[in-house]
Image (cartoon, rainbow, N blue to C red; front, side, top):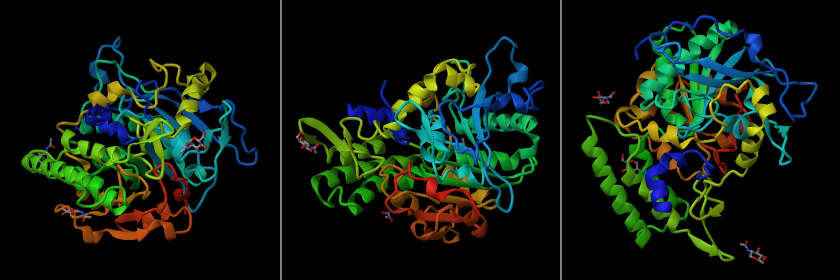
Length: 454
Ligand SMILES: *[C@@H]1O[C@H](CO)[C@@H](O)[C@H](O)[C@H]1NC(C)=O
Ligand SMILES: *[C@@H]1O[C@H](CO)[C@@H](O)[C@H](O)[C@H]1NC(C)=O
Ligand SMILES: *[C@@H]1O[C@H](CO)[C@@H](O)[C@H](O)[C@H]1NC(C)=O
């Protein structure tokens, strides 16, 4: 079961806690609702700090670039967002659009477990969390591609490729600025983690080419999946480095053999497409994880691939983690919560990661984002940072910057662990091409200390 789960669904694994259960420039849509209609006047069961209350806006925006040519009766794509205004002002106002991965996983992950202002309290409600990125930056958490989280579209219209996702995001943005024109002149960033390592370079490129007139300043990717050619071999390299698998052991040889054959496959494709994922390489993860399968008190457990310090039940191996998702599901399933967040138009109940979106978004004809990065980096800085306990999108692969199309010398490396808290945006501005080395003893969920402040 582990075998098949990883074979068919590895990119699920790029985001935690799954329970198995171009071109055309659309004009902004007419008759969009007013900004006031998106205001979330009350976040249910959140005890706010009255001295620094949160200002939240949320809802759906039409995001189908081809909507004008479709019959009015057709259900078109509507992406969903939650905007959390900055609590304080540093030197200037900033806005950051945030994406979680999967593909098919909701950005409520970022909002409620990673960089947002609240967490579940274990008693059915929420508690305010310290260190959220909204301290100094207006954050917009987006559910995309259409069908992810609370976003919706016709079920036979799910997207398949990254350039398509970019077009929908740009259409979303045009409508977003129509509703909230004050953000159009604000310094703008993109951020996200895991499979957002694919979205973000594509979206950055799309913004730079879309003549939006927005001051786009940079992007940050945490534990991202950017470069399959470097990151697949890193499963085994990381495992050796961290004492998970011993070099030249039988398991290592098995893993090495699969990695070598997979690299040959990638080599064969070179020239036509730079792949984002290949099934063969994904099976290397099995070798590493199976190695650590053991019986604890009669229960089969394995290593948590998102945080190698932890164990999880076999065969989930990390997909049951973090445990918050169960409470988030319950919370977002409440009708009063759905209404408060203006999500009533969503066609189904919220789901952290939606298998149908994941399967549809196969990206078999999209080049990996590593091929898009160089042209983006000529115009804006991008920062890649990595918690060092994550096995999948691990720092070894991200640091192995030997891609021939990138001049790796241009990346500055530094150790996030030595920085005082919250220097992410500052460093983006200070360094022309940020490449953060690693954050010691962090998994991908401990991102709040790197808040975007100046
Ligand atoms: C992918 O990249 C290759 C090499 O740069 C290029 O020849 C090809 O046209 C690209 N394919 C797509 C679909 O963008
Ligand atoms: C196994 O069970 C014993 C007795 O219930 C308990 O003390 C111990 O902590 C358990 N070990 C693990 C690793 O859960
Ligand atoms: C980095 O990538 C190269 C191939 O480009 C590979 O030979 C090497 O083993 C990789 N790993 C490290 C840790 O350098």
